[in-house]
Each structure stands twice: as structure tokens, then as C-alpha cells.
Length: 357
Image 1 (cartoon, rainbow, N blue to C red):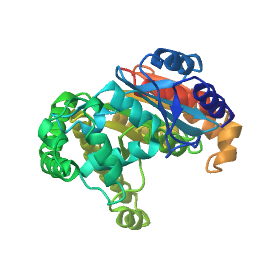
Image 2: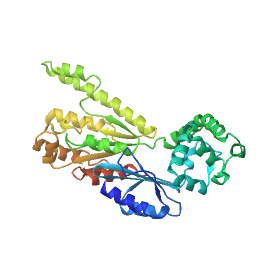
Image 3: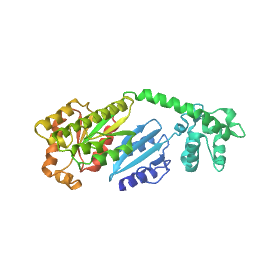
Image 4: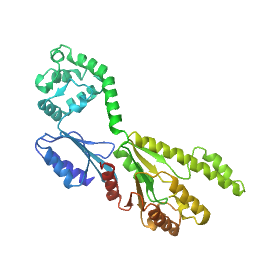
């Protein structure tokens, strides 16, 4: 929090930059209006502090960073035309952007108005004042500006064009993202931090999460019952785990195809059975071999004592053996090894990986 407060104050002290919110972690974002001429200076401040830029355009930059395990989002904007991205006939001028940047209540009213064209009676005076001043726009139909009821007229047009505009954007985004998705498999012994890292990173990007392992399956109660029968034949129940994992892997492939980012919790063949010997160990290796691999394996590791302290399901020898075998097993595939004891460093490293082109 202290670091976020310091950078907030540093930006706020620069003449022309105006803060629109307080310093709070996710799900809040910290908004700033930054005049276009000052934007390079603001960017330099974040780059020096090693914030990760997750979105950039000429007039709009978004920076993320984990501090003390919390995610902080800084949103720097000098142009609010993206509010009306589904309305092609409207372009706010630099003067209009400055007015919106300096007047937070006006900004909020216009943002709300731009979504659906709806407004409350108390909003109308500010909306009418803004939309009847021609200097606030580069491009805006004069018949709307000159209308006695320009706010209602524009609101009706936004409402009508919004559905078509959103449809066009979604179709365009679909084809732009096609086959550009990525998949990340988070592996490590129980207590290594898979759940913590997945839950933290999912707040930084739109992701799909898929569990793949040897538990939490659709027919798990039935499988558990069959496994209790005193017969070696009950071990064939494990083939159903494999079939369900194949189905889940197909879901991952589909999501990647349509451009989604996918987090895989565990990966078949890398879980606790990895330390089995003999025929069971051989089967485990076969399962890993034939399962299509993710784009990147993320190996979450810590000292065995630390892992044991988090979750007491395995002893120190088992934890160490699993960690060694996992690294060996995936050594020929794209992978990164993460030290989960360095929480912020590891989260920010992975955050940067997520936004690499």
C-alpha cells in the first residue's frame, strides 16, 4: 500500500494531472486524467517502479502491480472517446476531454450515459451543457447539438445503435483473437500455492479456469464408492478419471482456439502419483505423455518445510521427491519455475508473462 500511495502522490503533485479516485486495491482501480503532453512523464514514473503495462494506446495506459499480495490498477487517460466506441458519429475534442478530466461528476455522468443512453433528471443539466457546446467536439451531428432536447435525442440514438455497435465489436474481436489464446498449467505439490496464484492472477485478465487432476470429478461419489470394493479390479475406475481429463483438455483446446487465456489447475501425470514406482508409475508417465500439453508449465515451488507448513498432507520427503520429479518430467516443455515464498516478485513475473505478445 505504501508504494501505491507514494506513486499516487507523485502523480497528483504534477500540475495538470487530476486524480479521480482513492488508493484502494482490486477490485477498485485508481483513475487519473493525464493531459496528452504530460503522458510521457507519467509513463516514465510507472516504468521506473516496474509496473506492468497491460493496455496501451496513444491516449490511454493501464498499469498493474502486486504489492503485499494485493493487486493495484492505475488507469491513465487523456482521451475519453472510448466511452462512445459504439457511436461512430461522435468525437470529443481536446477541450471536451479536459472538461471531463477536470470535472469528476461530469465524467461519471457521461460514462453512465454512454453505456445505454439512459440518464436521471438530475444528470440532464450537465449533459445538456456539455453536448450543446460545439467546442467540446471534433465531429458531432449539428442537428443533435442544435436540438432543444439534444440529450433525449442522443440517448435514443445511443440506445438504438448500441446493440449493433456491440455486435460489430464482438465479431471483430472474435476474429482478431481467433487461435491466439494461451494455456498455463500450474503444478506443484499440495501446499505449493496453486490456488493462491490462480485466484490472484485471474483478477488481472479475463481467464477460463480448468481443473485437471485425479479428484473433483463429475461422478466422484460413484468412483469413490467403487474404489471401496475389496477387489483389484476396482483400480480400473481410474480410467474414468483419464476420460474426464481428456474431455476437460478438449475444453481447454477450444477456449485457446477462440482466443481465451486458460489457467489449468494441476496437469495429469504431474500430481502426487508422480512418485509411484513400478507399473503404477509407468501408467502415470504414459498418461502424461499422451495428454496434449499446455503452452506453458508454471512450476510452483518452495522449501519442503514451507509447503508442509501450508498443507500437512505430505511428508517432507514426498514433497521434495514430487518437486524433483515434476521439474524432470517437464524439462523438455516450455516452463518457468516460480519461488512462491517471494509472493510479489513471483506474481509480478507471471503477470508480465501473461501480457507478453
